[in-house]
Structures are given as C-alpha cells and as structure tokens.
Image (cartoon, rainbow, N blue to C red):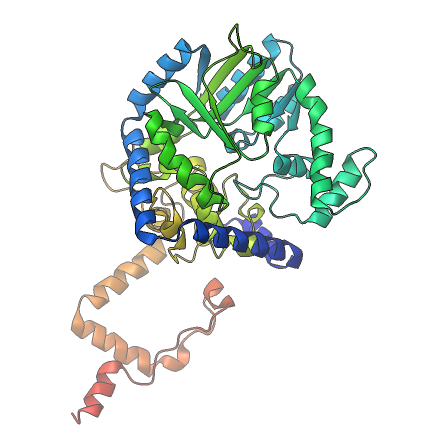
Length: 471
C-alpha cells in the first residue's frame, strides 16, 4: 500500500523554499491572532465544552434531526435532495441545471463540492463553473486544488498571484498591490454574477427547528452567489445539522476565532427559502443536496463518530507542525492536516489513504486547539492500529482495515511480548544481545534514513546494578 506519490510530494514540498515560507508566514499569523481572541483559558474551555456538546448531541440524534430539517426546509420552499455518494450528488446537480438549460454557474467556496469533484463533473457536462471566492478563483486559474480548507490559496504569495492574473486575465498588467489584485478579481467576477443561471454554495450549518441554512464568509461573494442567480443549489454533508437556532451562536463564536483569529466573519447569511412575492431580490428556486458519502457509516461507529463534529475551521491544520512544512497539496487528498488524517482513511479506505497517517508526530496540538474537542490524536492512533490489526470479532471493520498487517512482523511482536512477559527469558535474551552486539545491523529500512540504528549496550542494566552493589 506504500504511496510513492505521497513520498514524492513530501520531498517536493520540502525542497520548495518559497512554498514553505508562504506557509510559515500564514500559519504563524493565524496562530497569533487566534491566541489574542482567547486570552482566558478557562473561558475558552467552557465555550469548547458547550460547542462540543452541541455537535455531539446533533450527531447522536442525526436521523431524527435530518427528518425534521427536511420537513421544515420543504415547508419553507427549499427542495431537499439526498445523495448516497459523490456520483449521486453530481448527477442530481447536473440534472437540476440541465432541466433549466443552464450552462454557466457561479460557485462559492465549498469543501464538499471539492470532495465530490463537482467542478470536473460539470465541466464534462458542458457547464462552465466560475469560482467566486477569491482564493478559489486564484487556484482555479492555476488549475490546482485547495491547499487549505479555509484559505484555499494560502500557498501562493502576491508575486505568484500577480503572474497568474497577468497570464490568464485579458488586459491585466502585473501588480503586487493587494488592493489592486482584489479589485481585478472583483471586476472579472462581477459580470459572471449577473449572467450565471445558477449559484452553487456550501453550507456551514443547517438549523432543523426552523429550516435555515447558515453560510458565513468574508468577501460578500457568497451573498452574491446565493442571491443574484435565479437558481441557488446548496451542497453540504449530512452532519452539518444542529437542532436549534440558539445552538448556532456558540458555534459561530468559535469558528472564525479558531480559523483566522477574527471575532466574527464579515457576512453571516441565514437562508430560509426562495424569493417571496414582496422580496426585492433572491433566487426563484432554492435546492439543498445532502451528501452522505460515508458519513452515516462514521455516525454508526461509537469509536469514530467524533470525526463528524468538525466545523471546518482549520485550527488543527494551522497548528500542525507537519502541515506547515509540506502544505496541503502534499497530502494528495481533499482534506489535509490532522482532520484529513482522520477523515480521509475512513472516507476513502485505509488501503488508499492509510499512508497519510504517517504524516503525524502525535504532538497533540491539534486536539488542544480543536474548538469542538475532537480527540484527533487518539483517533489517529486508533486508525494506525487499524492499519496493522484486523477487526475484532463482532466488530465492523473499517474499509481496508489490516492493510499493512505483515504476518512475519506480527509474529515478531508476539515473540517480543512473550519474552517481556517471562523475566528469566528476558534476562537471558538481554545477555545474549549484549554478547552479540557487534552483529547488530546498522541499517533498519526507513527508520535509519534519519536516525542511528540502536545498538545494545555492552552491559545490561541488571549487570551494571549488580556491579554497583558489589554483587
């Protein structure tokens, strides 16, 4: 299962000084601003406890809340569509567009649409997709995937963005002025908002009791995407539901502070339905595509359901010492960083994404900063265990569980455990190893690529203690 592409991407990232400098600068800024937002550790702990309880309660009653959500959304005039996997979600969206003869859409930032490969699918159906988020617009020009779940183009600096705009946008002269670059993107996107037949967006939270979709953003592009086109299609995972409107405030308090160190995002959009007769603007139709794509399988497992608490703030990514060195593209999957290490092997299977689990030092920082208290280090350890151990009797296996199990290695570890459980045999083996220390191998595969091979000491600890005590 060894992913040679993963190794190659890591080494390419480590050798790219500009890329690493971009990440160090950005991640350092996020960490500093987050710390300023949470000066009181005890107050933060209480807020995290409450947010975690809200998400845990929602996941514990997920089928019930989804049924209530569908009822309230339909009553508000929002059509609900259920998609078992990426293929169903893409086909549903393409059908909605085809029925209305739409061949151009503007799209807000959405990790779920990245997950299902919506842009590529619609392009294959002859539909032009224009990314309206500035970061997504930049990487769309570059032909790249997001490198961060909150800041998609964080891996690029002003000079690289200026070159992209000059190369891809007609009549644009190179400039590294940030305000001018933003103005260029605004001018380029404005006519697309006015001429697109549909707007596609993600959803941050869904409120079941009142059938409300919540979308937060900083640029106003989300509001344009969901308001100007006559058709709005929202796409999100089934886990984003919460029960009450009052549950929204604690989550909106923590999300932007944890993500970018902002007190709150510039725009908080609460969408309750399509345009009504006395409304001055808004779409004529609103549709919600609820994507499962393995989420119900996670929700059914007590040992991994906490994965679904994630509110996509990216705090774990910002604080990860591995991510800051290699960036998001090195992971080769939709979700990078610690949350990606937990989510992708479960979503795609351990045989396909299990190698990602090696990109973790288990420093525990991700678990310390998660605003909804996902035990990320413990989940990563559990998945590493699942890579080399088959499921216990009566336990539902994870996709690809036991992929890295090697009978010889398993036998060696069983022997090691047996030796350590028998003191006399352990002392005899220790004596033998010290006697034969000159035969110890100097190379132990990948372990010794960056480390010295361990060599037994000349005398065992027991021998040294006996000599010290004159025995």
